[in-house]
Amino acid sequence: MLRPMPIPVIPDATARVARAAFPKGTLCMRLRDTFDALYRDEDFAGLYPNTGHPGVPPWRLALVTVFQFLEHLSDRQAAEQVRGRIDWKYALSLELDDPGFNFSVLCEFRARLIAGGQEQLLLDRLLTCFREQGLLKLRGRQRTDSTHVLSCARKLSRLESVGETLRAALNAIATVAPEWLSWCPEGWFSRYGPRVEMARMPKGQEEGRAYASEVGQDGFLLLERLDTAGPEEVRSLPAVEVLRRMWTLQFVRDESGVRLQAGRTENVRDRFNSPYDPEALYAAKGGMGWYGYRVHLTEVCDVDAPHIITNVTTTEAALTDYEAIDDIHHALAAREVLPGEHLMDGGYVSGDLMIRAKARHGVEVIGPTRRNPSWQARTGGYDVSAFEIDWE
Image 1 (tube, helix red, strand yellow):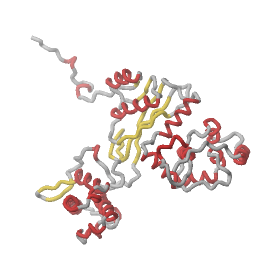
Image 2 (cartoon, rainbow, N blue to C red; image 1 turned 45 degrees about the horizontal axis):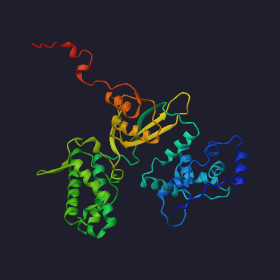
Image 3 (tube, rainbow, N blue to C red; image 1 turned 135 degrees about the vertical axis):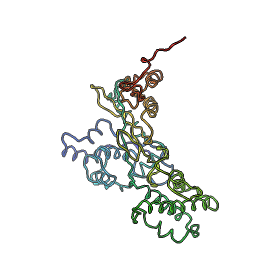
């Protein structure tokens, strides 16, 4: 449960030792001195139940999360810093002998933010503090660009991907309703027991086609059994839904049997690689292809102001820059941090965007327009000027 409490003052012993050890202060100490604690327990009131045992104050977890990001630390490392770093204890108002908390609490805190739809809360509160301190220049110049976010799941070959997807579905079913799997052919337990990539995969094309056909038939058999006699709690398992997606994308079944789709014919926006991260889709940009996501970062770029990040938008990897820019403008407007001039590359810019952004938000979009890819636009091509119209 959450029992909001005022931010405690920094203990005298902690303040004395920290200032003696760091006469000029550290980044963490300067953040505390300038912005107090940045966050309040009340900021997170909607994420906690009203009953239960009080846990670690969320304002501390939020601040640790910020420090963790600044120093590129894992959860374990961040928890160790809370126990051992004097400047962190100073910023967190902790006694010198405070033992801190278990590292898993940080993961649970992030899960609460996600479950409550408050992923942007930490950034929003930071921007509010920056605005109050006069550090955030409004209606100035900002820029937006995107980069890739790689999935943490191991990249699998096509055969490994379909085999592991079926194995993951069987394991999920075995956890919920193990007795229901009693009908499975005996060979399935040896074929799909260990992780697929740990087994010896077929080398030749004929062996590969035979393996794919066998796995495809097994998957279709499982799906048919689920549709006709599967319990509702089994049919609705996320791993079973992933199996349906994968089989729809990868397999063809007709009178000649079951086989993989010829080539990569599925919609690129639907293509995923691992059953353990099915939201990580395929995309390509600048000659690079990846499975994962795409993140769009917007920052202040005035020469006389700090370069502060004002928005972070994460999308499906296959969603283009142009398709994301309207959501970015809406997010900036909601935070009241819209720029007067918005710099971006050609992937975002179009004529209608320039007109739309100016009319809706008063934002002037600055950037190169996309090149005309048609053959008429190439050097030596025929365009309208090469023709005369005989109106008679």
